[in-house]
Amino acid sequence: MKCFRSLSAFFVLVSVSSADAQHFGLSRLFYPNVTLKADYTVPTSMNGTQDYGLTRTGFFGIIPVHSEVQLGYSLRKKLDLRAVHTVMLANFNQIQPTVDDKNSPDNGYKTLSLGVIRMQASIKDRLWVYGGGLGITESNQTFFAPQPFFWGGAARMHILGLRTQFMYGTVLSYNQKLRFIPVLGVNKGLGRHWRASALLPFMANVNYKATPWFNVDMLAGLNGYSGGFQIQTPEEKMMRRENYRNIKVGASANVHLFSVINISLEAGVSTFRQIRTFNSARENLTSTTPATAPYIGASVRYITSRSGISSKFTRKLGLGQAGINW
Image 1 (cartoon, rainbow, N blue to C red):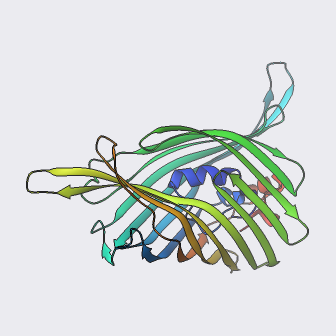
Image 2 (image 1 turned 90 degrees about the vertical axis):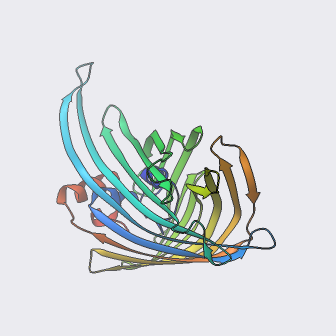
Image 3 (image 1 turned 30 degrees about the vertical axis):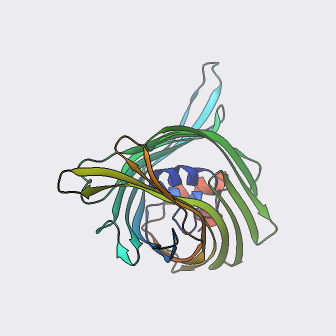
């Protein structure tokens, strides 16, 4: 996602609970669009005797629900122009881990999440972004007894011309434990064809735009899942939770076709991997560190409509060229 990646992409990352999109950009938040995605991590040794692999498929949609520009007066009776834009986020993932080429759990984990992002720009308060959402990641056995995760946060954005933007903010998240996470983002154009973006501590990206329809991303980012599953014994059913964390380092080639379709192909390595298993009392039962593994991924994105108001809004904020930036 390519314009000011480090702003609302942060809220998108938290809402889907992992950075599994091939690349990302703020201007995409102003248009109804849907993304189909898939990635595959090659099985590698996780404890010297077993191999761990991972396949992920999913759907991600962004739906603008409200946009308006308001003219009013502040408390000091000064003229204030305020623009607001609100979108809904919907995400579904099917995550299938394997141990020695056997599905574990049998039907994998399903992630469902919904979120809302609101951008507010005004003469008095400048530009703020607020967001929140909730979701679940569960197996078939625990789907109707889920442990939900949620997030919420706010960020202040500063636009220093069309080529430089930065932001800072804080997010509150809950996924088995409550966390406050400070975030810092920057987006900087480097010459005519290069752009560097970072959303710390989550992701960093360098983009090279070769032509209006082809560009390349070099990226690194946190990834993972936290899913519930069940172990059946003759005496009882035991609830367990599996946490998987890793860092992905790779590159993606992105092609923009017919003004509404974007195709991305990504490849790289998954490293600094860890799998931990907890019981219902949240006590750590096992911990393993799978070896570094190559991965490949692909996504197809479709922009369902392009509003003239949205195009003008993104151009005024310096968030993309011609109203959208892939």
